[in-house]
Image 1 (tube, rainbow, N blue to C red):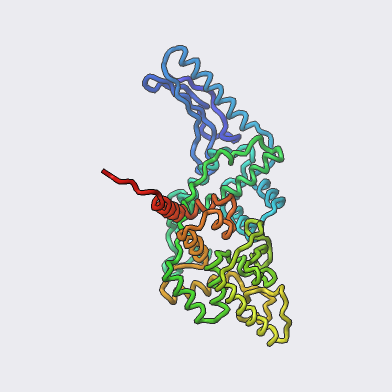
Image 2: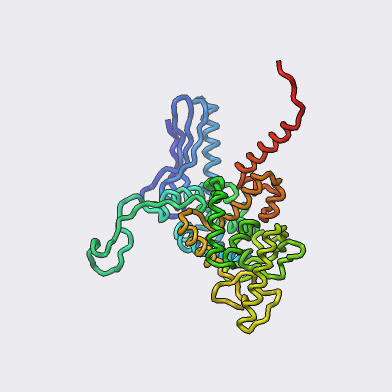
Length: 428
């Protein structure tokens, strides 16, 4: 048995094929309530609100009719929401008022223009629900261009008539976005919808309820001690400045931007420490990534290398008619002999990658940061100290999440040490 209701337009637009709003249907020993809620703006499929009411007696039918009325009120409230603010406008206002790094802003603009706006940018913010967001994320994980599943040839080289074989036009192959990329898109939408709630354009942010793709657990892959030795030996063979740079990353775990932005006035060789306050990102000097200052203690060998490096730099600067001052950069490119400009972070990354490739070692510069952390943890250094050297916040929570396996190994070593010091008991 079914109770049919009147028809409605599809999300405010009159549908060519009039459909019932909702109904109550018998399903075995229960009743199913269905109510048409419009079309999914991402997939184009019809969306229904549904509920199951146990039983088929008069009381069950009364509950089913109440649920149907509840669905009707919910959908009508959403459709009658008065707001001229579209998601595209909200995105523009959020980007305009947000304080984010230039490099991050550039990345966000790319995602907004290429992915978010074409899919859901035209929707009023009051019409966006957690289900719409989750459907959007699912589509992106299936195919980044959100194709309809039908085969087609991707993007002709020219609009003029041509031979696809000659122009190498390729059939479309679905490639889903990485979970980390979709999580970034969720961050953009979350920031925008949170702002919309603060600005009273919506009652609450649907992004707070929407599920985003799970983040894969970090899997650091540091070079082995033998590989690290080969890397630093090759670096010193190339030139002493480069060897000192690689050595410093290994022994301190500094980030690339921190290394490139380091000035001599932040290296206290007498106190044997580095005072990290600045970061070099996108051609500009900025705060450190976590906006926190930290001090890193140096071992005696590293101090000796930095003294030698300082003398080399001073002599080099004087050779080009300059004056050595404490605000010069510690590391500079081979073409910048006066050390007034830092070593380009991208150039450091590429040079290190080329060196590792020549040695047949599959690694990258950031892995040296992992090497520093894992060697310390393996040696039994406490988690809080390692976190402080790396500049991790949360009192070691980030360090524990990233290096859980090495922390566990260090904990096992601690247990064995403690056990070995306990008095031995005679066994029967």
